[in-house]
Length: 72
Image 1: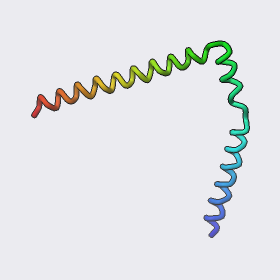
Image 2: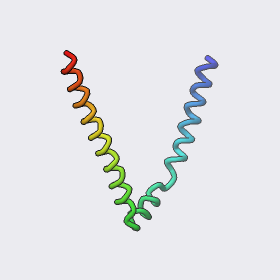
Image 3: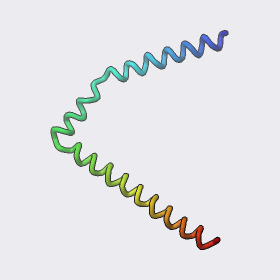
Image 4: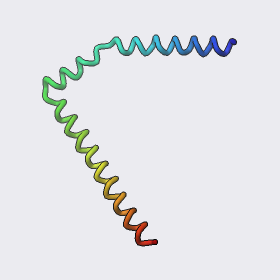
């Protein structure tokens, strides 16, 4: 019973701490970056990295498939 109460108290404490974090205005930074035009640079860099990763995985998969077919 003591373990359940302790777990419940930790859960409530964690929920209260997370609600404080959500109360902050995180949109202010995005507005500043959008106003300066830097947000588009960030999005372009993220998309470039993601496209590069997907391309790498796709090419690696094709190479592995060719190697598996050759060994059969």
